[in-house]
Image (cartoon, rainbow, N blue to C red):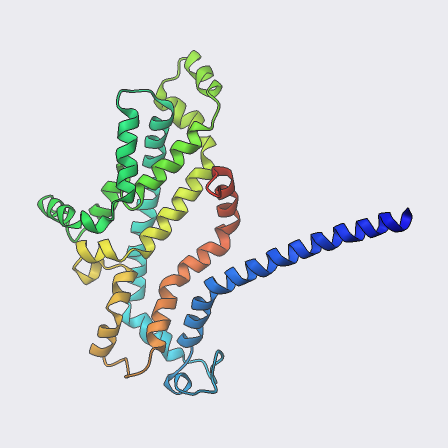
Length: 298
């Protein structure tokens, strides 16, 4: 009997070990798929022309080509473009988080005529590609004298829409729908109005959804190159992604780029994503926890 119990225990432990090993291998494969482009970008950015054409150099160059980063830094007009990108992305993310939370709360907790129909329109805007509306928006913003300014990014974000705004409204609506109604009933009995209930009770409870929305909005505004290329034409207002999209022609005009040297372009790409990599190091724990609490995993 003791032998059988030990055999059953060891068999259970073996199954558990094999299950964890399979999960680990799958996660390692997925991580490799996502990290391979970043690893290749970083490796190429550190290579000079000789290493790039040397078949014996695969990942580690013979010497780090610092001039790739120096010339890319200058061609990107890095500090000015970084300031523009960071300020607009931060302001748009904050405005979009607050406005999406307010709109999502209204759809989830307030009853008014046409609520479900309006929410269907919000979901419809989620599946409509922004390229189909860009001409109408360009004409509208031109009449409002908003071109070559940051208002096309900030005003829609403050009104609950903007980049991926419908998705954020949906996230907050689902989050607020899962909260107990007793919280609001107690506040209404004490004489609180809808706005006071939202700001004093519901919004502090929506911290996970706010973290997810803010980070998603910040990263998507940072990486967006389509709308800035339409609305911004003056180099002093350019974002990092705009400079990156024209960096090859800029380097050739400044005689920085030699034919066949992709290391400078890779270095410029690394400089653009570097702030996001640093940000992820500090916020990844809060981001994962917030994703789990908002129910986006399922």
